[in-house]
Image: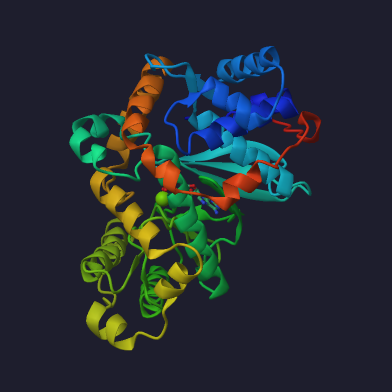
Length: 394
Ligand SMILES: Nc1ncnc2c1ncn2[C@@H]1O[C@H](COP(=O)(O)OP(=O)(O)O)[C@@H](O)[C@H]1O
Ligand SMILES: [Mg+2]
């Protein structure tokens, strides 16, 4: 799913109002009836609204749902992206979009720029996109799950990542500076460093190894385990300083499988250093002795207190456990190719499956009364205010 900012240039204020109405309507309707869209948008003149709906559908920001019992629409990924981008634009977090630098299983990552030209990173969380097939196989399970729509899960994932990044940043952990979060997206500082996986030679592997282990231990004593601590999620400055990224799978050291996750993180580093740099014999931190017995902080508790509640944390964990492999490194390539083939499938099939998925899990949106989304309704901007220089990203 590519981020497409093309529509930003010509959609009017009123088009945007209608798009927002579809988003609001989808809180309690899997397919939002056309009259409801008109009503929420608060616009008079049926013909005008019909034209706006048609424009939005042509631009793939909303999709007409086939075989619905009544005439209605749902928001697409593209529409959700658009709403988030517009909110970022209004806040001044993003002025223009640049190249895509990462396609993960669960996210798209772009370089963007602020109004003053400062480069930043935009990460769009994409839970649900690789799961269409899996979801088909898990229909029964999905029927019983209230909170698994792609919109909701992607937003939870972004909320979690943002909240953790913020707390880590405030506690002087080496992570990117978080800038804004909206819906399923995060804007953060761009780290001008290379991912560890691409680094062929390090000056002092022993030092980097011990720095990375010290970081795992420090994190653990503060109450947290990264959960995907590997060469994909560690950026290294030329000076040798590591920066940690990618937080949607973090867990508390009080999690029932904490030790297992901790050991796996440690093993990832040990294995990588041996394979890549031929470095062996570094000290191996012990979860009980080095972390649990020396706990000195409660960032895990603070995270829950600062908005990412335990309930949300559990919901996301349950979803991840069911549908996602919990490591970047294990099966990236396999997942990537599956994802590619999903994307190559005709839009209509994807839309269809997406709506089938939603139809089974939409209830969550009723319950999720997000004040933030309501206030986004006021994010009215005229199209001319949005000057996305590089409109289309390919
Ligand atoms: N703040 C950042 N600065 C620079 N590069 C980044 C930043 N965040 C992510 N990246 C790049 O994007 C890739 C994917 O980001 P990541 O957060 O790990 O997402 P995913 O969940 O898809 O693995 C990273 O491997 C890294 O190359
Ligand atoms: Mg990653």
